[in-house]
Image (cartoon, rainbow, N blue to C red; front, side, top):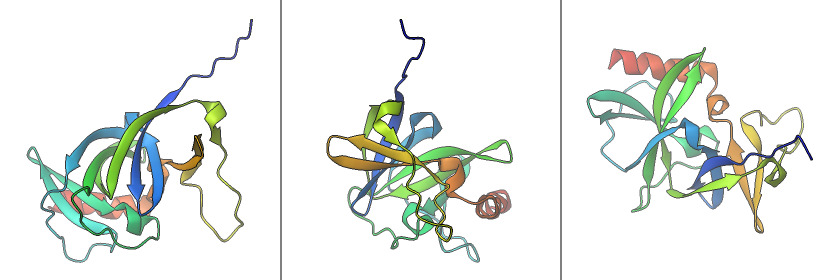
Length: 162
């Protein structure tokens, strides 16, 4: 009898461009239809602005810009994934624009490969691994590392000032 168990982890999958990304469901608070975003002057380019979420000011980032992709173009499927990320051990709520949310899937460790080693010049520490489902790859993000500490600090100070 094996003492090893492979527990599946649930991931929310979403599209950015033609690629499928995922983050652990435990980090997701909710998914919202696209809503009015109030722009905040003098914020980083990846920050779209803020939304009012039941009386709370929540900063919204363009995930595509965070990952050095082109700016998100609003479509009928564009949504805001509300996430809780860790900043110096403290939870911070942010909204992330996604082209569309796909589904919640279960992946166990046998379906996840380590992030590819690309070289010293390319930063991939925000990729937890590459999920495999049928013939497609899913980029699994370590959502706490997608934003550098400086980026989240800039967003957090904007949230406090708002």
